[in-house]
Image 1 (cartoon, rainbow, N blue to C red):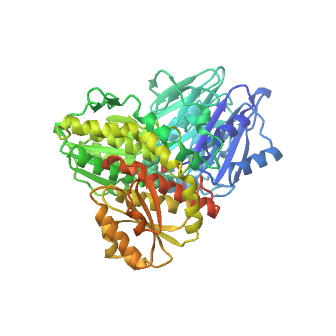
Image 2 (tube, protein in one colour; image 1 turned 120 degrees about the vertical axis):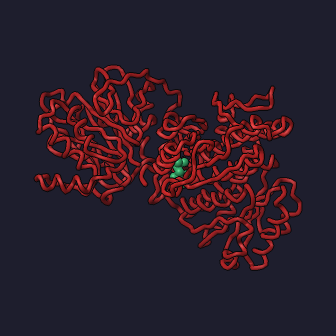
Image 3 (cartoon, protein in one colour; image 1 turned 30 degrees about the vertical axis):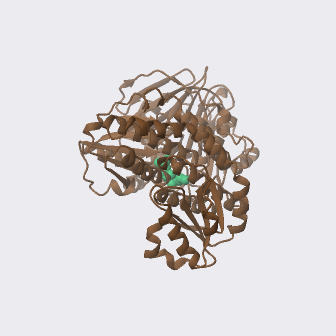
Length: 611
Ligand code: AGP
């Protein structure tokens, strides 16, 4: 949930750390800090500068209290243990040891009690500080170097973590370790980097080593040594990252979220590249070979927006491949002692690839013998690395906390997967596959048409933006889109919103309807149209304000709604990829109208690596 970066070389570390933290700020943003050493002029004591607030607060503080030196670590925090405060900000320093941490030490209470009994004094409420005490004590207890001290300390902690540790006594070394939180090393010329995310170091280097679960790494100016927690040497070839650094910048839009909404046609096109076999009316699923006829059931596990994508996946797969599908929230699945095993294909969906609930659900399914496929937007993230097979969406880095392009590319991945299963399982005829593939090819152009209605949606947002609540209704594959529309609005505008299956409205939420409640009803062309119109009339009969999302060419809908947003026609399985776009834009413009912090909404983080 936090962002971490380390630098060791001959340049001034602070500007590099701050530059990296700026790229990482989306991962955590209630406080920030750096610890920097200057080993060039003999023995050095690291200077820690940290404070509560956004990164800009730290930058201000650094102008008053500069931190010179060529070795350093930096952190942006999203609080888990201990409220956001100056004292709880990272880095934590104990004796010569400075430390930054992403994750949670589960046995921190027992360790704190043990350390306190042994005379340790704590200056924060965090679980992280405990690790600094352990490392200091390991050195006092005779560990010959920082790497050994960190290794001995790792044996004492349980939980999810990525640590980076620095010592005033060994200023030429950074030591990092990983368990369930991302960690990457960047390789430079006479300088090296450590970070929780490649985007933090992309402007400095493109040559990276991804650190695996249960590995630690010793980084000096001259090189990098990877071992496991027992000290056995691990080797691997560096990877070269091709993402451009500007891809992750705002590109002239007011917010990352707006930029990412507009990037969706391109993101979908990128996700389709190389995956369509037009000659055989089939898809190329990145070389993944599943024995489809042996799959008895598919179980999706995911959280939040990825859960909604999975619900659409259920509709697509049952429609095109006729394989039974279940969809489960990862946080429920992992604790339910689920009935799952060989014959089940568990599909873990996560844009970040780091969501802890989803990772733990995968571990549970693996323990019980299921095969795991991951759908992720982040290459080499923990979730795809845990899975037996990984399929990547190509949305590029998504910085806005509210997911948009990662969602629509997940839906495209679902469609490709459904065609793959349908063709291999025999349920999908070649003719139907050809029709759906032809519609997939058309999608980027049709999406652009919808995104260009931004002006109309902006004026709707102005009209309805003062409402105290919203209701979103949909049937079939539009039901998860109703849920997603409500989630998006809640996340960024802080307006209460509910998503409902339209047929369920009469079983309760109908009581909410009056002339003040805007109700967004998803009514694209298709088998649910007449039913959805009836639900829409139920709203109108109670003076609710209806905003209908319908298909271009629908001449009737105007008579049933206060406002109409039209999207192009497409295959029924792909309609969600178009109907979600106006809902994303409506949320964005309502939030913009209210003036909320759209890219970093309160209490939320981009990547949820805690339970
Ligand atoms: C999306 O707008 C949300 N911020 C959130 O619900 C997110 O989808 C959820 O935390 C799951 O994240 P993941 O896709 O990275 O696993």
